[in-house]
Image 1 (cartoon, each protein chain N blue to C red):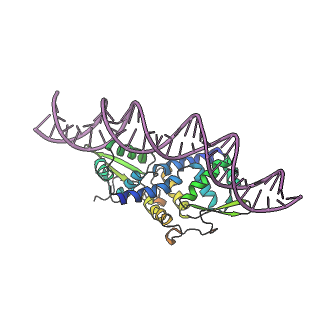
Image 2 (cartoon, rainbow over the protein chains, first blue to last red):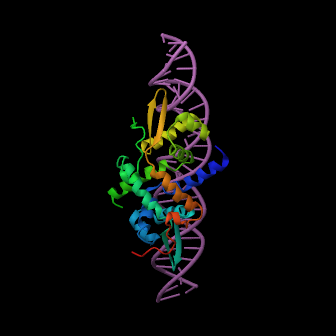
Image 3 (spheres, rainbow over the protein chains, first blue to last red):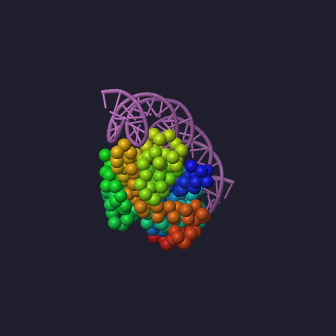
Length: 113
Length: 113
DNA sequence: TTGATATTTGGCGATTTTACCAAATCGCCA
DNA sequence: TGGCGATTTGGTAAAATCGCCAAATATCAA
């Protein structure tokens, strides 16, 4: 694979990796309903606040969320609303694949063995 | 976080994790243009064929792709076309976030709860 | 300034992921 | 039947990820 192509997929993978964790998905979901500060998110997750802070760092590093400091609190907001739409597709896959909402391609018919 | 909610996000995370690797993103992209067998995908990726086979196993385990054996070859196809659409959103984020195609929400504009 | 609250950072052990090689299967055909 | 091409599986070492604690930083108010 050409270097330029590899880089493209690696960049995409960084974004996907940022979304590949339950707590971070919860954060995205929560932020889709409005901005939240770290301790609010921590309440919902249950991990140590430092852990939540690091999750936010991961999301922020790829541009999925943004943090704005107001007073002593940092308010995070979602910068990538389309992620939430994608969750609908993910749910369809989880329900067994062939959901119309996901426009799943029924090519093959080959089931997992 | 309630157990049921945790499970939901964990299930979603499994799907996202399956997409969180450059080679697997390449595979999804390639399969969006039609079915391919393992050695074809291997040619494009450059890793050992056993490595590619394992990547396909990951994608298949969550239902993103399906494999059908025809003769001595296994043809893989994409079962989750919406993933490709999502790549457009990911690219928008990579380009700096505020792409119209992604309906990005600008930081600090999230409605309060 | 001192103390309290909010968040981030450093560091560490534990778990997971990844890629390669070698070996095992599977289907096909001479 | 024996061998070949295609694919999968087992094993393993290196790298990345995760979550907690402790410590640092920043803001606010007394």
